Length: 142
Image 1 (tube, rainbow, N blue to C red):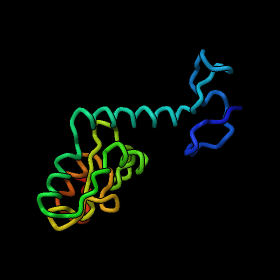
Image 2 (cartoon, rainbow, N blue to C red):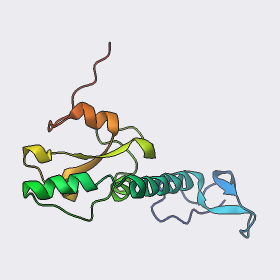
Image 3 (cartoon, helix red, strand yellow):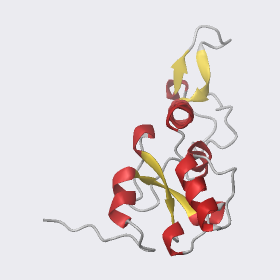
Image 4 (cartoon, helix red, strand yellow):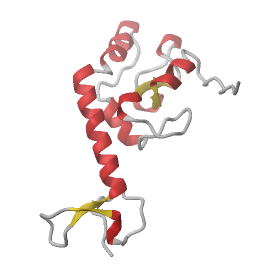
């Protein structure tokens, strides 16, 4: 049995050693974080890398400033990914780093702000489907 070092670990501690990747450098031959925490941390790192490359939040900050709307410059896709635990807030499924986008609950085009309480993590497809509405469209099965 081993305990995950991540304080936000939602797994039950202590866990079986099989829930940890092998690592030669550690004392017990297992990684410090459980497998699920390792996966979550790697996904977050990929979001940070993508955000640096593409600068995702830049256009939204510019739009908010042009409209004269309240804007929080500390909002990042990586911070949002971490806050929402990598879960799309529209369809409630896991978001892969390359599918992540920032969605405004109350759209900027309708007077919404670019602040932490008005943004959520979504898939790009879910965000496009929602468009500038305040509520997402229902998924239709055809």
